[in-house]
Length: 106
Image 1 (cartoon, rainbow, N blue to C red):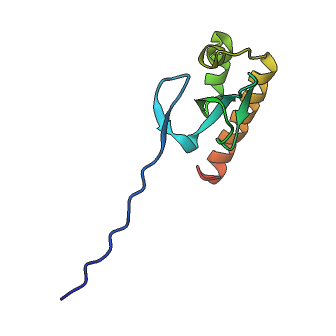
Image 2: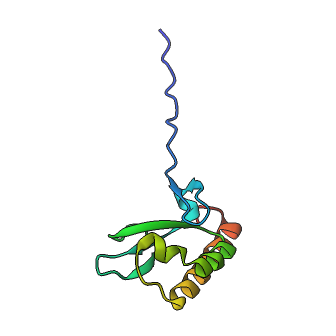
């Protein structure tokens, strides 16, 4: 009797909804923003901080639009400073450049 070949298991890709475009995208292609229990809103590069989270795609133009419309404040019910948006824009721009150079796992 011939042995059956073991098939490779297909892994499910975790998807998250982009706060700005309302599109579902792979989690690795997004950045998590979190409001911790103290009410501080920050960028969560690890995706493991405790608190209410929202995801934003790696699109610097969308970050500028989010700042204009105060999308993050509305979604996380917190106070967001302009400095936070500057940090977020710089972080997203940096991550996007890394993904273009090294691929999505960089």
